[in-house]
Image 1 (spheres, rainbow, N blue to C red):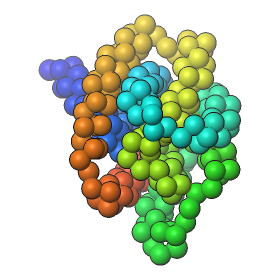
Image 2 (cartoon, rainbow, N blue to C red; image 1 turned 120 degrees about the horizontal axis):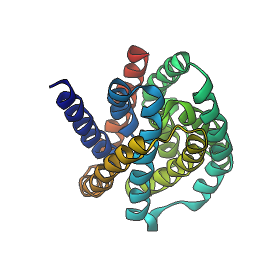
Image 3 (spheres, helix red, strand yellow; image 1 turned 135 degrees about the vertical axis):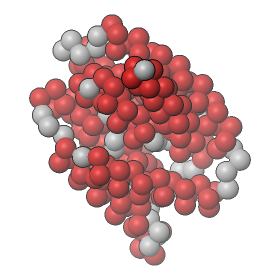
Length: 243
């Protein structure tokens, strides 16, 4: 009975999390990771999530290909890929509780900041995606999809919206998963069982990416912005509570 409950929890969390990611660009890791940790333990949960996230982000890249801002993806990738390598090794060796709390506080501040007069006038510069990529790659390397809500704020502040935001953000976050998977594999953290589970959850991620695009095309721009901010704030609170 307990096994059935755990399987059901993983499937439901994956369906909700990746549908949310298909609409908002993030949220998959926030929703899914706690359940995966509960069922499989942290050391196996992160590699499983990395596999499914890679499939999900790859699908969103495909769906929004013609709207991707390649300059942003390049600037972001220059620092995020090497930082993800470092972050992955930190994950193998270190405790991440304090850093989860820091990310949580930062997300709450950002959610409020974006709706203040000074926040509304803030515009992200192209060069800013280099340091942003470093912070995101490092954090994603040892916290799974946790930095996603934090990072999305700056993509929106650059002026990206809807398909251009989803495609560019998916490309940026997808690049991070590649070095992570290589490092996890070379350190025997990608077990056959973990790979199969990750691929299974990845199939759900692919399906929900299509569902998310359909929902996203019907969303009012103002409601989209407000909804993203609410999700970022909720994510920040959940990180603080869970850690």
